[in-house]
Length: 359
Image (cartoon, rainbow, N blue to C red; front, side, top):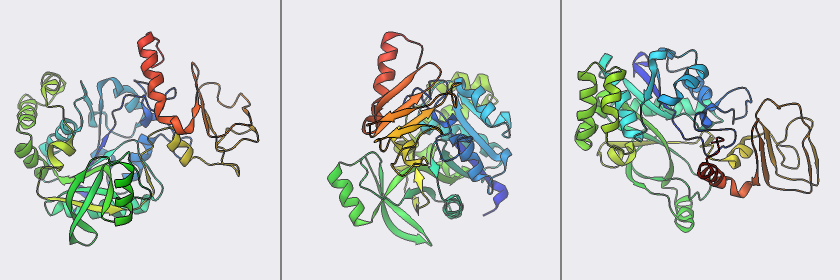
């Protein structure tokens, strides 16, 4: 495996609903500092995490056209031509396809890793070791994914069932499994033959082009048309909206025969809600994650985040409350039980119905 041929594609779209009011439609969660470093966004952390194995000029950011400017601002070290701004959202297969065709233009046998922009990793050297193993398998012609060794019977993730070993730390994929119910998830955890699907993919540009041609021929035709017309913004604007709206999982990975998986255990968190932010935060002896100078009396396991111009100027006092999320921005305050963190989307939906501009 030649490091000079490795490219990273970071998928950085998003609708900005799960971390409202800090995230918005034009400022989704990858721009927020939701990990352990309050100065580093999830997107910036993702790019930094791969920097020891991928040079900045081979990092590509796939995002929406409406997020082009905040992406530039978040990643000044990445060449602007490497920001692939989609005119409309068409799910991950067109996203991966566009990036693959772009990279293949200069190096048909380039090694490509595709990563989400909004995950958090505690063991970064461990992540890179797994990524390098996956890239090595990809160099042999496999389409490779990384599966996370589960730590709980999670019902919110898809799973990957392990098949036969094909190398050191590399297994065939027996099948992909949709999100299970609690009983099934518990059996997966006990059985040890299933991994969480983390949405990471590794392949050569040639192998992915062939797989898309086989399993998504309509997408291939659209991508070929884009590059036959020069591959510029006008060609993308013309053809991208006509591409099939389908995920790379459903469109390619679940159909292809040469699929492999590398198990990983490197402290992965998909940062899916304010509950995840509490999990990652530094907490006091009572389990509270609070701004400096806060007062907590008979209060346990609460998360308070101040994420606007007021940050550092107010004292937060919590008395006799437990398991709450409190988030304050310049124009909104969110208060809800941590256990209902996923219900933030209901607030966003209600605001849209009312026509208020806080979404």
